[in-house]
Length: 171
Image 1 (cartoon, rainbow, N blue to C red):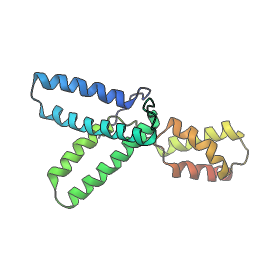
Image 2 (cartoon, rainbow, N blue to C red):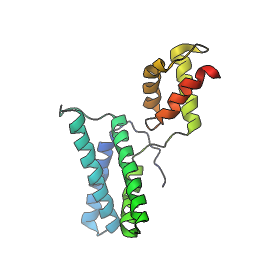
Image 3 (cartoon, helix red, strand yellow):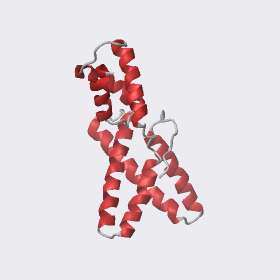
Image 4 (tube, rainbow, N blue to C red):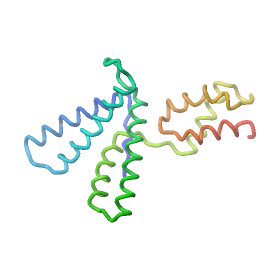
């Protein structure tokens, strides 16, 4: 599964709507089963984004932040991965293949996941900037550090960040 590494400064929902429109235009001109399946997956993603936006914010003018959209898509990715595993375990290859196709569409809207080394390095640079180089860092400082790391790397593993903060003074 190749991940899209585009910049994510525009709403994912807007990108999905634009892609849906181009697929619908294509489908009016020719019958294309792959495009039809992709359109169905995009509809699923769009409905989840809209549903989640309504749960998070009752203000209809509010639009989910990019990180909120990415978090939801990440949850959808994990759910599809679990379903693929379950279908394969039960020898339901057709359902597993459908889930894989949907997962591939979801993955195109997720940013590249940072490596453990990238997370650790960036976390240390944030600690040096916020707390100060050579100063003691405590778990209480997580409230300042975590949002900064998650801003750059929305999919960063919180455990890696936490461990980096805890072990910072021992280096």
